[in-house]
Image (cartoon, rainbow, N blue to C red; front, side, top):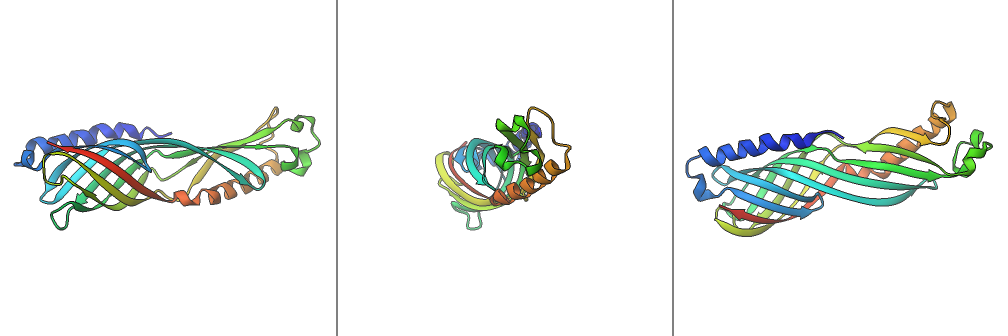
Length: 228
């Protein structure tokens, strides 16, 4: 896991500086957002840079799990999303509608664990007694540390003070899934055996293919906002 959460503090510092130094910003509204959606729960601070243009930054966090069967092996996937978005919103018509573009400092990952028996293991090792008990395959899937984002949205209190809500839809390109540290966990270490390494290479390719939909990850968020 990469400690990207440390970037949250300079983002907040920059936004606060704009809110305190830009003339007339108080009339335009420093914004606080609470969000929930496909990136999890999160919060953001936003400030106007230019007319009809806002910069926002914050954090998102989400954990969830799902199962899948790959090559007759049952896998559990534990997804942990942790990211810091830095997004520029452009209101092209000066109203509630906006277009967005920016970057996510990305700490998203997926833990992998597969459970298998002797019938699933390379044939050369089926004869060993310890394989009567299940052994497992485990590893981690990671993505690009900096991921570009594009989207669009709508918020009710653009350019106004007070409470509002909004909706944001977009796509996060976080690159093809990259599995690391894939290994067999068993009573004895067999990971240096050639047949096991071939088995792991095959599983790595199939797991990455199974998770390929994470490459272009859909972003949908409901926002509750307050502008000062």
